[in-house]
Image (cartoon, rainbow, N blue to C red):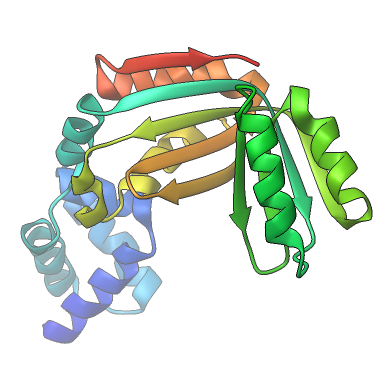
Length: 218
């Protein structure tokens, strides 16, 4: 019994759509049991059914928690954003520091996210040329016409598993192609093509019911 229970649990853990349905209790247990029997290669129907019924007790859905957190969050929207990826070089941080000062002092947007293969600079479109001039041949790629949705949540999100995945999966299931995700402390940032911004705001408004929303344009 324990072995079948473990195999069912492992199968559900890699199938998030089925997992959510089981956690919410909105699935036909008999039909799902027969389906999973074929997937994991077992004939133990009763054991699979028992495992499915027990699963929500030990792995409850956190959706209500996610929604409570979103209701306490602030949402900020930024338009006319560019993403510029540059090579990681010894002089990178000196250049970033200088750019940060010159851009933000005049009210511009600037953020840098370092990765293994390069550093992504998020900047308002009005300052794209300035970044390009500074980095020149070190620029690996550039993506224009982007928007940024920033969710600023309570500190509790640091201890809640699946919060980022929950929001990202809902945006994706509504046809929004997320270009980049970044998480810093209690800030959660989704960068997408600007054409998706209004839809993204509508979805987040439904999730949070009464979001504190701030729009920023450049």
